Image 1: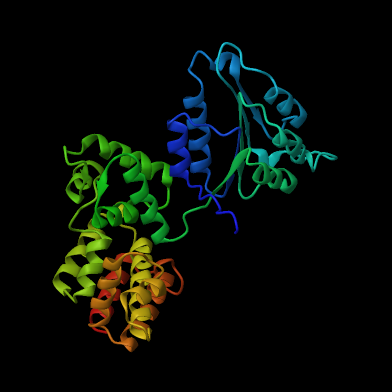
Image 2 (image 1 turned 90 degrees about the vertical axis):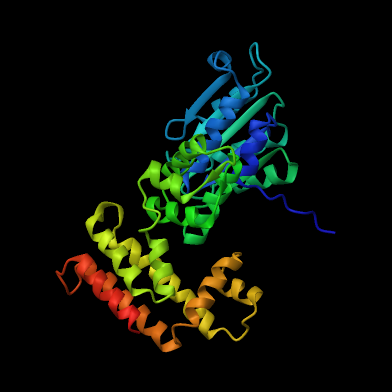
Length: 349
């Protein structure tokens, strides 16, 4: 029977670290630097007190690090502390000097018998670490963990990250609040999680982050946002839709047209998929839309009952045209005038 593969996430590793359960070796790699930096900092903070760091924390940087020296430091016992922490940052820059291309592979021998009192943290940003013999040994011996920090690429990934982070800090957040934050802040995770930390300090005894709380403290309108615009178009509520885009035009800094068009493109593409699906069961539609949210499927089904297949095709064309023209392709017209025109075309499709 095949051995079950360990599922490693940012939140599971962070919880381990906060509980002071440490692995001998951490390889933190990938395209999303936020998770890598946060985990490395969390390990240092949890493993050593401020006083212990003077003698037991060693930090190296890949551009000028000598891997043999790093390994030698890992093999030293801690001074007046339970453990030593060695951090190699920017490991993607190791081995760029002539004759040193495979220096990271030297960690393979250390991974065979790591010192129990040392915590080695290797941070490799931009992709996977180029040291397959080392990572293969790490996985085979179970002497450490490889964490892949994937960049948030889709709205679904971003919304899942928001929900997971809220849960990790003991907060409850509803779908509308998630969408408001995703639309307003975007995929800047450092800013996003910082705002969630602030909101967590302001919640009532029920620990709920609500649209009202977000509106009061972040400046996003709970009534005039892309989430509400999507609902207005889903219901073909022209009055509400025009009120929202009028608000957008008066507050352009917080409501860029490119974000609105992108959100609507995603929504109507999903509606078209629902229209075209042969299997209309909730499970099949969730798979087709790439979501685990039955609520999201229900919203798309409601829109699909009000827009024909041809209407959806036309709307996607209007969205592409508006996106190009708002960026100056074939038009110098004001972006919000184009948005008004787009909403009119959608409502009359």
